Image (cartoon, rainbow, N blue to C red; front, side, top):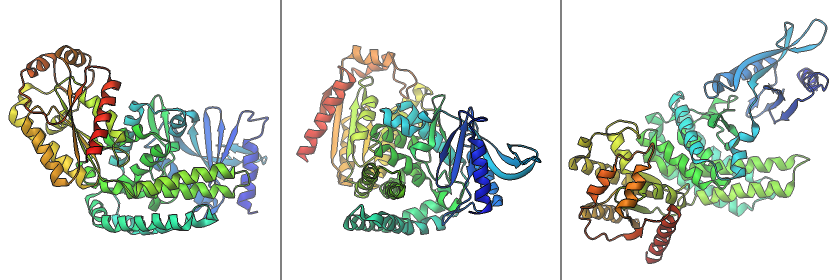
Length: 513
């Protein structure tokens, strides 16, 4: 045992002494020990050395603590406070933040409710949509503030990540070698196809010093707001990645926890509040999410070496991650769904409800005309626009942007749901032309409801992107819709009834293709 290890054992014994700390709880990981005592948490780096980190000396542990504060405090100031010395006093006793000789350092944090981390919430039931949307906002804000980095090292590291996944999954013979080989070959093939795009994103500034470990256990709800914590501090190379690779960890973990709806909300909200270039890079998500799933599979398999591991449960857990990695690396062909109808028929609610079920994972990108109009005039989604912004030439521009973005999404191999009134035959015909151009199936859904129903729904809206009023709904009654050519859906009932009818119509469309 090294001197540092012996000193740490003394410290750990002192911090868990039942006389002085009757309610303390200790949590150990491979690299740190955390002591939860009342409202405070102390995190001490263990005196260990691994290929990916070195905490073998007091100086290195102090530097790691300081780096953890530097990286995490901007993300979670309510959790991370300071680096505190653990000192040996003149009488030989140990004291946190004493006046004696420092013999160890710790990250001092505020304790939070561990049952409110997103992995715990995800296991308890469907995640709250508002929390999922706010998590996307928090990630987008973190990425916007993250320093730019040289992309060459990141892009060059990806083949090594694929190989390391393969080697790690082979250990222990828990997964058949031929299955791992299929994953490895598909990953290399996809990387070869994406290499120019990844290099271009690097030149555009999308490789940054990110969180690096953005799975659900590292996001906690505090005051109903998501807080990112425990970002990687020990090796900036691991966290210096494309922002979509950082996002992909959360998306993958949501899918692993059977939270498809939340995953789709996170994807769409992230795309809505980040640069449009991310829309042009959706094709990288299958590789990125698959890599993340493969890494989690091998990390999970490594737990089998613990003497107290439930071998069957851990192996099953790892297998689920591996199966997800295989599924993600082979995405099905994209689809184009259109949701039309007069104001108040429930188009946007329906589009959001349909999106999680439209492959490939994590569901379709929703393109909404109301949101695009607000973006064109550079106002918040809930800001009201004047009538002049609804002139026919402006509306034509909105539809042009809708088609352009749908084309971008489909070109990336991802599905899109286009949400707009589509009152003109020409608008519907142009979408059909786009589907043929992109060689994807189109399923159009046109929602129908009586005026009273539509006006009642419009009157109950709060904080929505639509500027439609009850007067606008009445004016739309005089529209000449012409030959619809899409599935006409009775939307006068409940949201569940409309959703069921639309799913049935999409299924019928699948059979006809």
